[in-house]
Length: 228
Image (cartoon, rainbow, N blue to C red):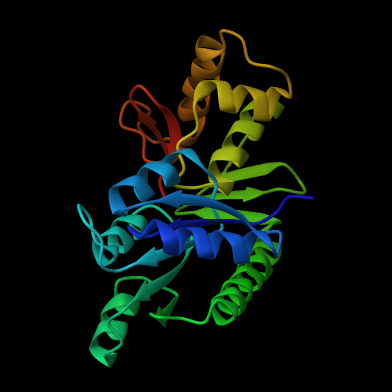
């Protein structure tokens, strides 16, 4: 069974430690970041179900981080802040946060809020799991069908597997090795060229201009992603 993953973003280690203990007791796996910059780095590397995001942090504050997250991800965001004025809550929610909890908080209330958000995300995921749509691109998972606009696209099983992986985790960057192991179901060796060829073939089929792809983006030196 896969446990949900929560990214805890707070510049105070003591607060991260307390949250981690309570969430781990509920079989919720936690990742940590001390500011918005670290949070974005983690989100580029890991699949996360919810972000607990403090507002007041050095380098990059929570409001800015939330805006950056929303540029490429629909992950649940619960903001934490010592500021409890209505205007601060409105600002956080208007920047894309899904919920807001003031500091100091009761850890049991925090856990209840987190579990509620995770249940909601699971319900949405279950409702959408048969179909994925990004712009004009639609994937019918049960029937292994892909359409772009009115055009049906014929994909090989490997191409379909790569596209489904990237689309299910839109905004997340996957290395060639990660893609190979997830789709081919075997240990990756020197898989860069193999994956690159299939990505090129995919672009030829689904992109209007493969040289300037709309869907499958290359993150140089890291891997590939589908824009959210």
